[in-house]
Length: 73
Image (cartoon, rainbow, N blue to C red; front, top):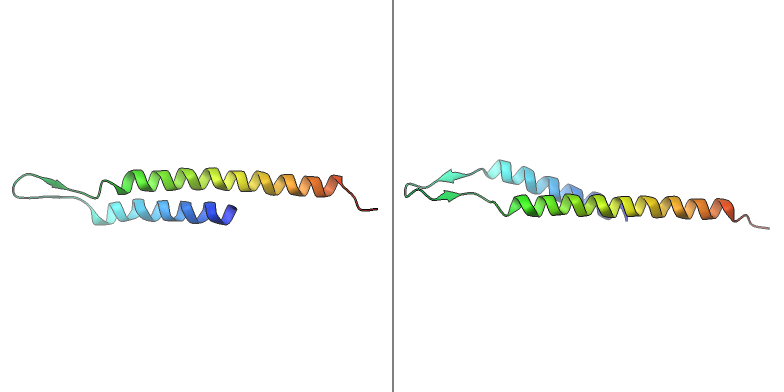
């Protein structure tokens, strides 16, 4: 699960970097062209990656704690 979280956070960071790389431009008629959709997509991917990563880390700690407390006979 932590790998999925890391993957989602990487995609989110790439999305925000792509927004900065593409940039925005102003047409002669006054309209603004910018890839605005990349901002909420990147933010959502980063936040969901953090949540999934934290859940995976807690789950890993929980499993290790259970294995320590239950000793084989």
